[in-house]
Image (cartoon, rainbow, N blue to C red; front, side, top):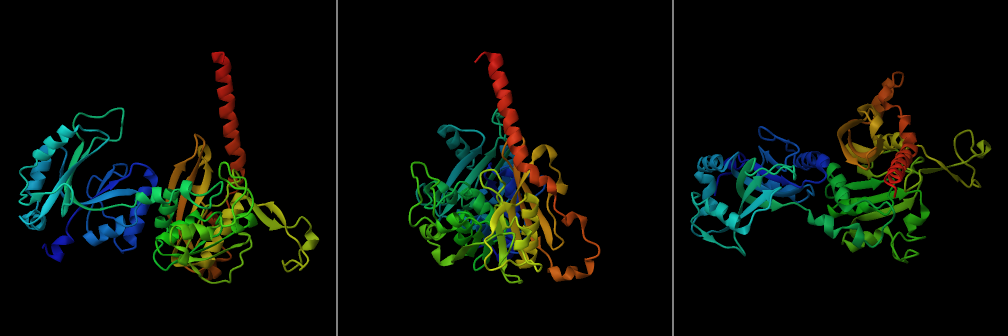
Length: 466
């Protein structure tokens, strides 16, 4: 076998899925950070490419990443690469025989696959490409069903399906290491989940958020807008203890109208705990409770390793908090009388995010991460709109387009210090920490865009005489 020193000098090739393009780099960086490894791409790195070549990793590092990634399809130990098959041949012939030898000796069995991105090859063409690799020193036996080692020839034909070149832009050859966790998107699909709501988070995005937050085994994760608990399901899958709160009593207790087609009311066992039971992670369930995010009930301490949430935007779910329209109901010290019954009030988006960042600064451990969705009106978006807090450092900002005029951005922040360190700065607050009130008009701008589009479609229909 190759020495441990030589193994650390290998290059590895990641084959990335071509959906959720903006989320891939932060996910891979976060998963490498869990092993205290930097993200070191090879020269000519292209973030939009489906193939990433990485340096300074071990096989264990790569397997650890692939055991969690939903953005990566497969990983390979890279043996050779080139812009043409001729360059690939030269690269492979220059690859260290010592590093090849454990996988090509007479007692080994192997198989070679051919994968093409953005182009489909006939079976006969694939066989020709495999036969053209006869210069490789394989001495073992071919086994298509159960090989000890799998090798892959990968060809990249670009990302434009309307302009596919005759020859690949780049070719790679390597030993397969592991596949990613794309299967989780299907196995945890909301369509087959026991308890769902109108805004249950997509399974793939839930796992991406979990990875961005660097959630790991035995972490304690909190969702202050828990809803039907999709994010708790994802976090518990990776061994974290999960808890959450929500202002909606019916959602927390699994009561009221069902969100499923042809089902009027929720069943007696439709709740978040049942969802975790469905996936075998009920032991990671701490609890959920009815609570107002604007009035936290937690003691003032660093309690959570990660806070992951999808706040309501006022589109399919209302933005609400508790309060009173009567000033006399509230005592001078800010508390309410025992007989006070709170009513529902509007909860502005700017206040939601300001409270969320303040809560995270108070209750995250140092190094813990906050991951949340921020809706934006695209024509007016700029970096200055991202909420800031002096205790939280922005790690990544990824966009998911919702329509031609709206999108939501997945914001990841990391706690860098405790709030008490800011006492001396009370007289000079950071202006970036003030709420951006432009978020409050998101609902109006969202529906304004829909109305404009509907108006244009009606006008077009009139012109066409339909």
